[in-house]
Length: 351
Image 1: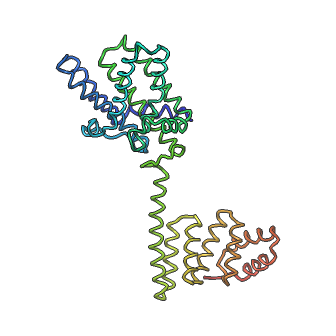
Image 2: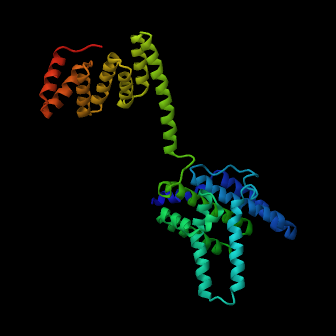
Image 3: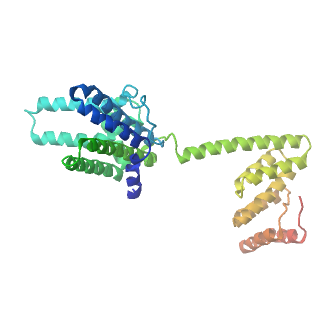
């Protein structure tokens, strides 16, 4: 675990939508508190906003998204009832402890409270990344999160403990309005740290992120595949129309957009072989060999050249490329390849 990454994640609420929510809610908290009994409904509404937004932040960041944009709909607990579940559980546990308080030992009560606090981040994580509210209390699901997060889970517990101690100490010295802002930041900070920890450990948790580099790569690969198939269809059409020069030019133009990677060249070469277009395949073998030699993948290049020879082709290569392949063939003791490369150097092939 990188401490710098964890701290960066925990400080995320200092910017963006969470910071704006703190700026909006804090003055309203102060006004509601000044209103006395009349302000209790507003306090309840504001508490619902903050609590629901905390859950939404965990869910969004756990799936690779930025914190959600502030909106009345998203901060309403009726829009996202899952956020109410931890509060319901806390009320039930509190009621049960009050009922059993006279019959249970203080050590048992302390142990129960400690266990609930330790498992609280795991419960929130399960609520945010899995379907089914009941699983937020299912021990195997909670244990899976704890084990999957590893040291990060301990860091989350430490972060929550540090915030709790700091708020308790500062409450004696700071005005209520400032304490309300700090409490919201602490809650959002823990939520951001939990969500980003889930995202960073998504492989261990088998979490499918909605937005992640690997998904972007998959989408890019799919788009590139569709473009390649379109190009191949165009080239095949030109070949069937006996327009070989135009087909070769289209192939060269497409390969130029694919950079120095030999993969696209190899793929198009294989397609040409499927079409039984030996002339185009021979031309593409030359382009493939040029790329492999430039990348110093000389052993692979020599294998490609031998495959081309076996099909009866002789790709066009520059003298420098022939010399590079000749040196590899001599070191490998491939006498037949050495002889043919000497012939290619003496009688260069053309397209």
